Image (cartoon, rainbow, N blue to C red; front, side):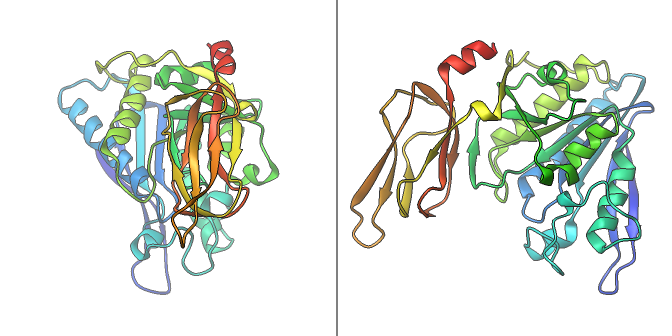
Amino acid sequence: MKREILYTMKMPYRQDFLLEGFRFGEGEKSCAVVGGIRGDEVQQMYTCARLVKALAEIEQRGNLLPGHEILVIPCANRFSMNVGKRFWPMDGSDINRMFPGYDLGETTQRIAAGLFEAVKDYRCGIHMASFYLPGKFVPHARIVNTGYQSPALGSMFGLPYIVTREPKPIDTTTLNYNWQIWDSATFNIYTQETSRLDDDSATNAVDAVLRYLSRVGAVKYTCYSGYLSTVISESELINVLTPAGGIFKALKAPGEEVRRGEVIGQIIDPFTAEITHEITAAAKSMVFFAMEKPLVLEHEIAFKLVCRKTAENGN
């Protein structure tokens, strides 16, 4: 294992900005894994740290196979993380909306450029990402349809679902999109938390990456075979919206089966604790996403459901 400073930027206050990575093996640039880009992505950083530890142990046992190089970057934004801000503290800009970056541009453009230069030549790119909605998902990998995507390669992770989605204009400046444009097979992997730690989902994500690395011949690692992944489009997910504002209470968790018309959530009056509205499932389905937010407004996404017919067709 080589611990390296991949990018340095002089700062007018406190210490310099450093982008640190851990390099394993030598040879073809097989896989790069990036953790927290935003300042609240503690779970994503922790998952990559767990991956660094696992790869170091694999290396000590002599099970890194020759001809492959693996790079892991646990955190690409320690400044924001140190002060507890999701975006860049000085101007509120989002590094993951600045790719491929510009080395003579604004601060976050320069950081994005330094990060992208370090990872763009790897055959596979994995981003431990967080979602814009607060809540929990069924473990899955997500791919933006750029024309360069490879859902079949994503099945090597052994996760329950591979979700594909059509890119929106805002996606063209993300790490995932630009990684693909530079001819890398790229996946976002989602775990259960963002700002809090979840050991079980971190373990599942680390196992998924090691399973992939084992199947492409980069490491010798024995683990359970995982799932036969179901590939679905994000457009096939059923959004269930909150009917009114108030205190939100989810009655079903990701992975649970629900029937059409079954009550899966409640809206509670914040002053009287009376149930004002019940949220029901629109079809026989499985809960793919459940929001974790105590106070909600009307028409927020409370759940995302996978219709059972869609899942069966995906298999």
